[in-house]
Amino acid sequence: MANAFSKEERVAFEDLLEGFNDALVLSRNVSIYRTESQMMERARNTIWRPQPYIATSISSTPGTSIASDYQDFTQLAVPATLGFSKTVPWTMTTLELRDALQEGRLGDAAKQRLASDINVAIMNVAANQGTLVVPINGAAGDYDDVALCDSIMNEQGVPTENRYMALSSRDYNGLAGNLAVATRSFGNNKSDKAYERSYVGMVAGFETYKLDYANRITAQTATVTIATNGAQVRYVPAATSNSVGGQINVDNRYQTVTVSTTSGVNAGDCFTIAGIEAVHHITKQSTGQLKTFRVISVDSGTTMTISPPMIGANSSPTDAELQYKNINVASVSGTASITWLNIDAAPINVFWQRDALELLPGRYAVPTDAGTAVMRASTDQGIELVMQKFYDIDSMTIKYRLDTLFGVVNKQPEMSGILLFNQVP
Image 1 (cartoon, helix red, strand yellow):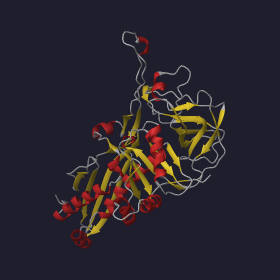
Image 2: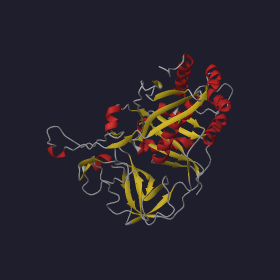
Image 3: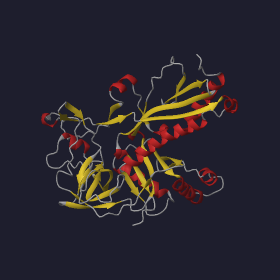
Image 4: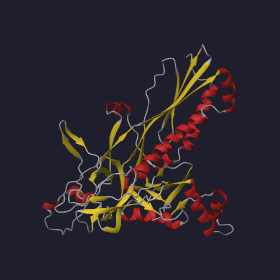
């Protein structure tokens, strides 16, 4: 083939793939679902992924009939889309190529960019859709800050294994500074690493990572009340709904609510509602703590979409409401006040349980007999990199491009959240 890869280029691609695999820090700590290319094309690159079942129980004595107590399980699902198609194209002349190949620099910048794109996509989904919110008055400084994230997860029944946290550089280093002082002693491995490398590691059940970038949240201080009538605090989960074309799947992560005003409200804002408490997702007992919510979108002057929905399971609830109940309506009337948790602008630090976030590797069907040289390989997570090469004889220029296709979905926003520092009332 006229555009075949040289031996040097193949070695460079192998080195590039190895470095790309190492750079995928966040993708190693989320669940992976490998899609089938033909099916995804026919489904417009969208597949519905199941959320975890939650069961309810009853008291039963052997010999006593429970015929009327059998329940229907409602399997909820969320749409996951191969929505990220990232490409890094570049050109090199035949003169430039001599040095680049020998020094092993071919594609290094492309590799770093695509790895960053995947990490940023995971970060954006976690930062924008995680609904467990922990605001801290002061700057990042000690174990107690991270322990509050552990507490909010434990109280709501999030699995204790495979928990991760990614912090902005300043907040991560603030925690490292505390370790360097609080545990300081000669030969103390935890303290030495914190002092020498600003390394935190495992804290309060979370494996922590330092980010050289982090999303930021804006300040919100608008005065808003929300309607807390029966309909708004009684979202009814449903696997499907009927439409003109028949049954369609329902995404139960969101709810449209009515508020006094959305003026100044932004997507991403965090809040609690007076009298609406969180419950443990298995036992359904109230935690005594206010449930935290996120604004997903502002839809009109008095309506907005929030996550998670308010599933109160009040007055003759359905089986689905009993299974997925997530709030306890402690004391509300017709309206209740909203308290914003992001009262000051700050970096968004994210934490999650592995099964909450999912990465979906995709695949391009690039022809190998169309005059363009093609190499492809996959990382340990199944992320495929495709490298293509084409030579222009007129300009003696070689075109390269490095491509990857993937999707990211937050299957369970109530198993992921954000930690905000410097939220001074």
